[in-house]
Amino acid sequence: MRKARTQKNIMKPVYVMGRRSAFVRSFGVFEDCDALEILSRTTDGLLRALKLEPSFIDDFIVGTVIPQTKNPNIARDTILNLGIAAEIPGYTINRSCFSGLQTVINASMTIQSGYSSFVLTGGVENLSDVPVMYSREARKFLVRLAKARSASAKLNIIKHFRAKAWLPHRPDITEPLTGLSMGLYAETIARSSGISRKDQDLYAAESHRRGANAQEKGLFLSDIIPVWPSPEYSRAVSEDDIIGLKYTDDDFIHQKPMFDKRYGLITGLNSPTLTDGAAVCLIADEAAANAHGLTPSLRILSWDVLALDPWKEFLTGPPLTIARLLKKTGMNIKNIDLFEIHESCSAQVLSCLSLLNSDEFSSHYLGKSKAIGAPEPDKVNVNGGAIAIGHPFGATGLRMLITLERELKAQDLHYGIIVISSPGGITGSLLVERI
Image (tube, rainbow, N blue to C red; front, side, top):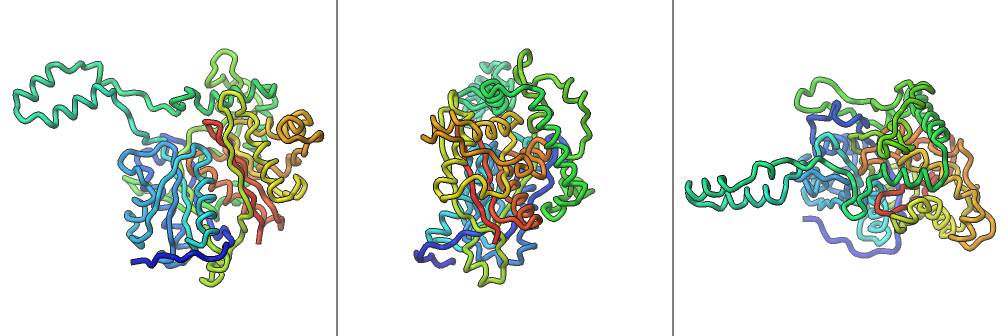
């Protein structure tokens, strides 16, 4: 049994290594897999690359947004499924699209406290295999039928059941309280920001171009753990299949709105498509990592998480969290070399950059007369973002961290910020420094 850790001085959380599966279109090559399989294979690939004895790992934190009912705590189930170090507890969280990045923040906090030295963080989504819900009447019928002791009692229950109650509810990704999906949030963002459909399409085309360019150069090869999906196990899935599709100007122009069919601005090309995939990273105490022969590549310097009114202030989350993070660390926008800003839609990124340049926004939200300024376009999502690569909700934050680490190293740069805005008005950011 693992010994309980004693509290220490504040430790320094670092990113050691991350790997992900290929990100693929839902209802495609991972259609017959479940989330446990995708996450298990990705986790196994990272552990093999790390060559760290699993018994040194203190916890496994996993983010997932639409959990499968058979593995509600998929973090713990992955540990047991792989047969590694059964004393690793594991827990699963849901903070919408921010879930993956939240696992890194949780791991960093437990490391800073001195409670943990090594924490696996993960995210997974398999939208090809979401739970299908039946009506309350149908569920109650099954319970009563199971409790009935005699054939006549069962027959009587069956006789009074309405066939209509068996109609399944279509899987839905809208929030139960706001009634909004990320697509409808995106429509609100697009209208509120006044960003034209043309500008959104131009941004999306650039994201696709950057993603395709990165893939052609082989930049993602070292990130991806090949997965042989069940039940055939006939071929390895080792390349993102959304990237690289060649779109012309006409393709963008003739795309019809997805959510607001009549007046909408959000299409299937200027927003992410439904995606399956997983990502896993190791976050550690810097001294412990060095002592075990590992080579940390990023220091996790700070983070910020905020919640805003999802009906009124969803637009302001990303620029506001960037401003708060910079203030907290005494840095300014020019100190940051690269940004990964989540592409929930083109308008989200464009509105963030616009508000960072807005004196009015700065005055109202930050109490400053002058805008803090926006980063140059060549510092933002340089390898493309979710529009080009895909967006498995729980895994995207970790994919962004993996991408950012590799690009900081490739360009010999120092500081990077990740920003993710989620349904429900939750937004957060993470600041890292290359070691």
